[in-house]
Image (cartoon, rainbow, N blue to C red):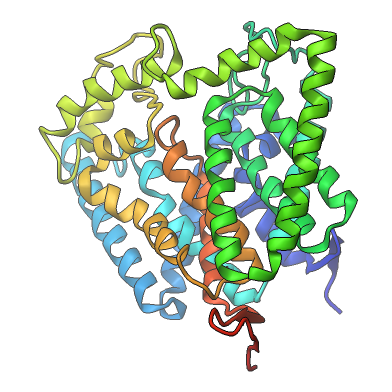
Length: 423
């Protein structure tokens, strides 16, 4: 009898759970930090696991679908090219591992998709609950300096933001998954506890003040309602109830806050306004625009395959904040992939999101896809602010897995007739 683990009403065998934990959840920096509290150790561990995942995917090549094999094949050709350059120019098998890590999401996405398909897993509810628990555990352990002041703190590595928001935007962004999950649950079930958990996720996203997460979450919600209504017209009742309750709570909250401390509303209004004015002098949005403009001059010099190892060793043309030999610390996902791997890398890496965007217009999505498709599409927007973390691409792999599974039912537009899927 095989040992199993049961969490969030989901039963999974111990072997599979350990695989999912170390090859999926451990890639979330908040999770790895809880266990090690050592950024260098985490980086080395992730590198080792990444190499192992690539080796595993190569051994499973026959079990992959044709399109997946094409991606693995192109990726392998790029690796052979890079290894050859490294051996000839640097006398090393792979001179700078960061170059591999930037393009590795291509393999990682396929790996997670293949793994879930192999096990016929249904992990989304587990992932949603897991993120909420990890957030509270992390804040209980390391969040004692949290405040709205945005003052600098002693924590500035790993999952930390370096200020009193505590957690970096790349990790808070992942709260969008339970945010959408519990929103969808409330709309379909109208249960109060689901609305409470949705509201809890909303508060988490709000109080950490990452404007990149605010804009991405708003974008994801807009896409979610479009996808939901296209796929299930009978959800309109739940959507109406949601907006009625939300509007009432919003009026109540604004009334209470304006009575207690009106400056809070002005503070958040000012923070939100910078989303609409990213070029504001002294803002992080202005920093990103300037960084992108400077690096575009390099990108146009080598647009096809990028700068590779040579680019990694170039002196930072914009700032000297970071130590030499650590790369360029991009705050822009598109610029990073174009700089290191060119247009070929950009197409290879972001083609998964382009496909998901195309599937967003389908009328036959299952409920998991209705949640994950908006989240993944919001990655297009988040990439203008930060590089997407590796665990995001694991969620993309999960989305692609669910997109392959037909829904249990779908509605015919002309007759609104319920059509059951045949086994």
